[in-house]
Length: 334
Image (cartoon, rainbow, N blue to C red; front, side, top):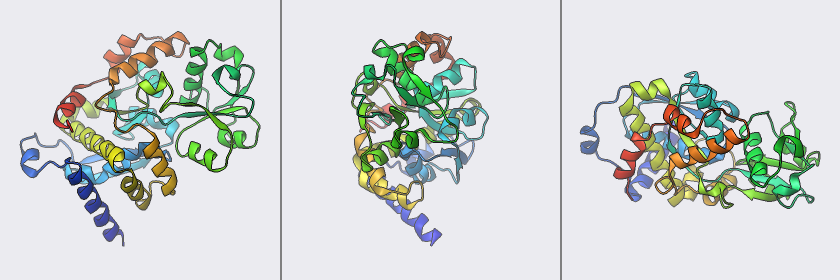
């Protein structure tokens, strides 16, 4: 059965990639330099929005990788796992990457992947961000992506996030459960959490980062790599990024088939949640949006509210490398 499932995944990936014009023949790969390594470690967590990383497995095999490992990493630990060399590549939200770069962690941001993911939910007494004044907002950890993003959204409408919002953190209870139980007024979630709340008819969306500006004008998930791996394995880095971006294209053009495959492969349990995530978020933006603009946008606002000390220019200089992305934009024009 495992062999049959693996072959089925491979054939599905080949069929989808062929239909999308994304396959490169042996001759095309032959003109490229030889891979420095055929092993690559990627992160795995409950987040459905990083579907391109999961679907990329067979595309990575087509790129010449033979040992592809998915390592269980909690969403809040993605950046630290990259910095410590536990995994080679992982996607994360820009507000999670920037503090790590500011702190000198050895990570390199390679490009943007998709737009959306996060949705801010409120109860009946909260109709907009300004209504959060004096209200309770649940976050898993102080300094988490959810905490940073709500802080930036509150500051954007003129609130003082430290004084005007009542932050609630409880390491023993997930914020989504506190929100369902009516113990907090607002909660920031990412797939499959928004899908679960809609299914349970709990709360309503205040901000959807996939459609509400200015957040929808910038990337959510950005692909990063371990700095040493990127430096010493440039050929492998480009091929990993190429596989992920091809998978991102397929998430946009064939969401139903991609959703079915990542469920069948055991990355996420619910097909309906996976399909909704792929259809509602922007997986067709990586060519159009400017990855550097995303880093600049968030770094400027994070410095204004005191999350980082470095300037956007310093963050970009120390923690990004767009060479591979620029090459792939020329190669993968369709």
